[in-house]
Length: 313
Image (cartoon, rainbow, N blue to C red; front, side, top):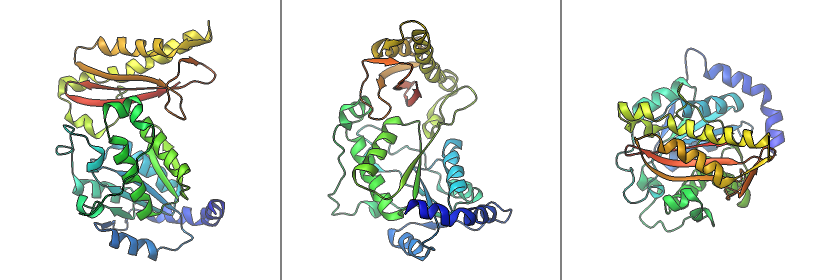
């Protein structure tokens, strides 16, 4: 089915992209209810391919890289903006998470997005809502331990959005490695008829991974924040050095190389975890070799701002 869609839409994509990115852009249709979006979805030509970019808003260039890739690969692009309460824990930043819907609508319009689904929390979680997707094992990995219940909230909202939008492809950044692994697992385990397209992390010129939470950083904290990426590069350097001698290196040694760099920065107030894992399962690796590689992920606070990042080895 997916092959037929790709073949049947190859010529249409060029026309669609050309018209969408023309000087006179078609207006973005904003849907705040599931009913409204579903009516629009049913009205679409069934032979057209749908690319979907789910976000929590406060869009930056990292989000836009997802949108641009979706625009290049699909006839129709749908984005969503929803700050999902069920993936935030007690004491996290749900209430202060940046919300700038009007600005985001303008940005998405300029990128040629046709439809935006921007529901309220009440729309997505009715008063009698009791059903959740609880992915086994993800609460036991470092990100799950540091954010109890987070992956249950992510799994639930992503499943709900996929059921509403019914995309052929959905686009996610690699910055949140555990989330990407989870979503790929859900799609495979629940036999969902769509493809997950990972997109490389977008970085500022100094290496800091783009994130909506970067807006919380003070000027001094922002100046210090690139230490996060530098710490991950230390793991890459250590593995490359091991590859030229022993050929493998203990995961704990790679983690310690990362921690040493983070702890050298006084504004890093808390290193929540540094994890060296299998790229496919996010399960801890005792040793890493240059041939098979792995992924090093971390979460730390610069000042009071929690930042995450990772590097593929």
